[in-house]
Length: 365
Ligand code: MAN
Figure (spheres, helix red, strand yellow):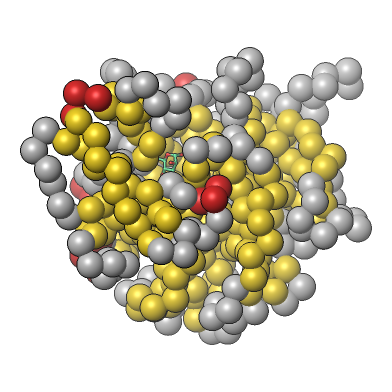
């Protein structure tokens, strides 16, 4: 049973102008969210496709750093579709995305206000960003905003970081987790002397179950001390699972709201994405102290059943006002929405986790 909450649809593709002539916006979703003065800043993932269609051909987009978006055309018979997001040109040795993403700023005057779309964008610049930059998360650390985002290219799916003081000028710091690793969220405070982040390694070897990991860093750029943190416990999250919002400090511990998806019901489709919650030890966040046995946010509204990838809710930002949490999330890889959740309800939905046996080196389960 999802938690009782009030959901507001904030943005649809038609609310955002395309980056270039000849391109159309097909998604505005998976937004980072952070308080900025008395406003809330969202960094939106905007996905675009070329407007042009060619009979019998498929156009797969790519960003040429320094120039902008371009399209590679293939004969339809030469492209194998894995699902609506992923395609493999025959004979090619890597996958391609069917759309191209970059990041765009929006500002809200209160948590459920209509966002104002700003001109500021973060677009692909580095060779490891040629298939797009996606799914940002923002943490305010020592007065500076640190933005982790996914960088997709022929080299794989990796995570990069940028920082800013004012959401006008951004400094890029390059890759922090090499392929394949995404869903990286940075704790907003040091744990002891070190910074900490959750991440999700997902290599092609497929030895591992879907897992979230924790890592530590002296400077937010060099990461080590890696260890597994959490794996799935239920069917709804047994296919993919990764951090959602940057860990949020509560009196009881660090709250992490993450996403999980179950296995797809048929080939070529994508499983349902829902959100779960963890509470991590306030001083040793490598220890999970409570978890939600059921998803806390599920696609229940009409607008959550539609979109490019139906039945996806994907949490990426959290803002607190008193006892209310505002959870910003992507819907169906198409829309941006916010859910207002009462903090006491969320805490009531968590079950304490017994500490694992002393010899167990594996992740908390
Ligand atoms: C993956 C990523 C996300 C996306 C979900 C659902 O986890 O590509 O960006 O929102 O799938 O499609």
